[in-house]
Length: 349
Image (cartoon, rainbow, N blue to C red; front, side, top):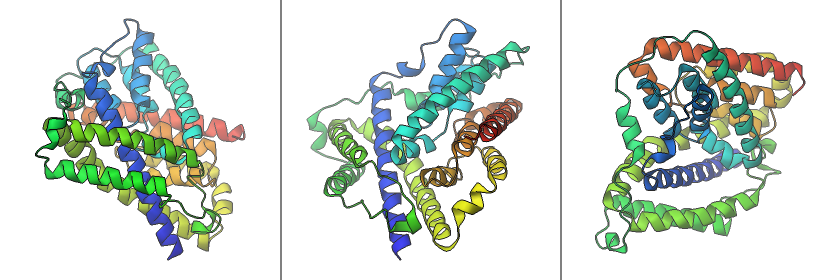
């Protein structure tokens, strides 16, 4: 029961932090009119760097924008590969929630690897670019050309979605401020130690106040289409279930087995497993590696292999319009992930 409750509290905390970050990023993207993803470099190097920067953005915004730009011939294939290497999907939010300092180092390493790989890919004869505009709707969703239409008058007749968002955000702020989501790390989940930086929770409590404000004053379009339909409906349940499942499985495994010794004796296999699971174009299964890394069970080499190989669902629009391009890019990702992962392993990292 103790392990179950610890996993439940952890899942609630992770889900809350991730949703707050997603809502903040949605607000920034909408208020910028989508321009955060439309400034292109003229040189091939600039395109690859742009692809990497779009990919390293947490979530799917940068990835969808990159695929849309690539489909119109505005970015090279190397830039697309760079995006997919740098992107960690929704797991990037979870990493920022669970180990923010290490997450920033991982993002920096991913950016360096993706730029080098993207430039190498573009050094070879270019393949035929994908054509079509099937991905445009993804880009428009995040572009947000309507703004948020902020006004306190929007609270006069709030929709039930706005009320739920306000109540949920307020409850999360209260839980953070009162420490209701904290737990005893020394006895929880067989020693699973995450969320040790209490200051992170305080920072997110402040950020949540800002989310509470723009949720209250935003126009109905922003609340319905951006906050509810995109963030809550598409991400909330899956993030909670995958987080809870991963924490519960790892907690039980660490309680009943010497998981650390078992895994550390099979790092080469774990790297291969991380690469193969990374081929799945969806967020969720990769959270097991995030949880293992947060608990100190797997080393940096396995974590990097997982992050490089997987890109959440940022590449799904590419699969819809160019199956050959999708397969080619994913195979390059897997190859780079294996090379980097095993290189770090042999270096003792």
